[in-house]
Length: 146
Image (cartoon, rainbow, N blue to C red):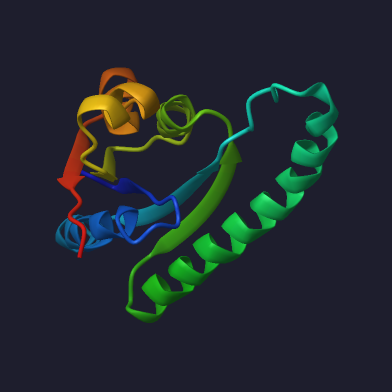
């Protein structure tokens, strides 16, 4: 049923709470586990003179994201999983949904940070947007602060 499972990670311990669920699904269905991290493109700065600084930071953010994902992929492979990793740029929800559609993903597994009230209004819910945009099933894991 599920041959390609996408697990989204943003580098936070909260997002990593989705990984055990993704691993269980991959094991149950003998599926390939694909780890994805989205590097958010910074919005245009309020002060135009800051734009070059933000653009200069993008390669560093991409490199850090790639190292993080590759480390997680290496761990999974040592545990016996068939695993791949990727890093893309863009707005998180749209990038995740587009990646899933473009890479024949059968299931997306991701943690929801559980924001509510003002913080949800201010930051939005990436998980909710992925749920609406994705063309495949989405398994949301409620992340808990340790």
